[in-house]
Length: 276
Image 1 (cartoon, rainbow, N blue to C red):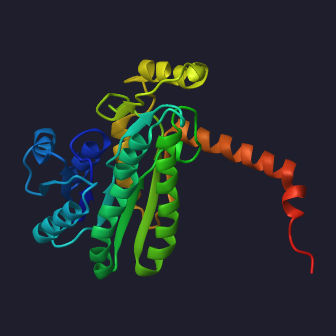
Image 2 (image 1 turned 180 degrees about the horizontal axis):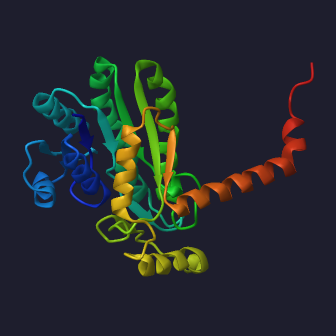
Image 3 (image 1 turned 180 degrees about the vertical axis):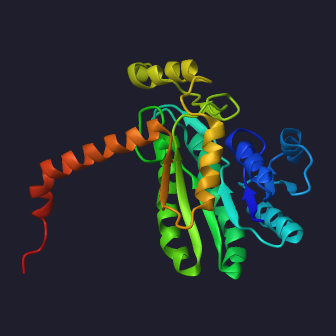
């Protein structure tokens, strides 16, 4: 039996993965700002511990981990799922809005990871799974600030992969495409307070698209949860795992763009070395 520690487990993909883990006989430390929401979603279960956690409060992260260790003795899988999106042009996003989203999506992930890793290092095993986004691999208009938080998750995950591999701990960054969850609802997505008319053709169009795409996304959340279980069961885990056909296509598109620009500008790029 493995023990999972899942942030943002009261709804969406976090709740679905928690339910799948319980179905296969694993234990789950399911965290949310309101633990009662976890129980309302998942029900009472002998292998379930619902714990209060606001990931922006580092002290709460340590308290939640300690409570889970006291109950189950170990943490085998850390799933950093908690986060939200912001839709708006980079210029439209205020300093306060940027700070709030970084506090959850980046600093919150770091708070929880720092609280869990001492236990995984003591065990000499574990799997850290950080949720990024297709927007964390290629930025797109309207999602610049949100995507930048996921770019940060990508970079942190790459470094963690290298640092923790010799200690027997796996690290994977998961890059979901658009799945039919509540991500585009007001619960998970905020819009910038400022909307400038100059960006109507780009960001304005993205706002209108997001409204129409809500609950019409191509990805199946249940299949996503199953894919995460397969990832955890894999003997050799990848450093990154895109999930969803749109995420895979976005990665191919970016690779083509980068390779094309690299070829076009290679001569200039290579011309700047010192000649001894």
